[in-house]
Image (cartoon, rainbow, N blue to C red; front, top):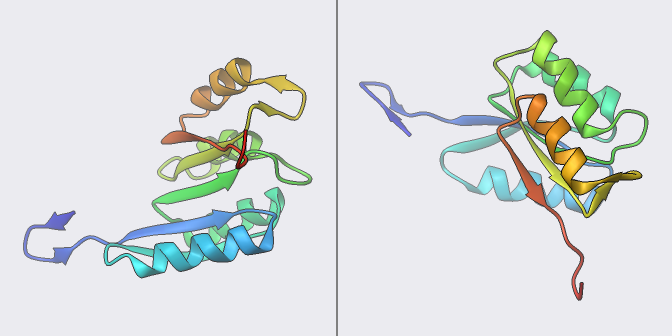
Length: 123
């Protein structure tokens, strides 16, 4: 995304994922892009809020099913605390015990940037 007279815009991203290898792989992939940089990572929902408020990234990439505070709850809180931050929420077939269509509706109410449907290999 070039900007007039200032060179390419770098998209600042925070990654919130409880699985260590997924979290680190996302950081690696983002940092490998010329127009993106991972400015922080979080292991759970409360840490995601703290890091996101501290760094004020352009985008938060967050797992829907984090311990202590899920990704949709984090996105809803950020809507109030840091409204310029957009969330991309990774979501499986359901969120906790909530069916996917209901989880999607709630996530969209949080003004997310998008949802990623996460599937397991072989399913």
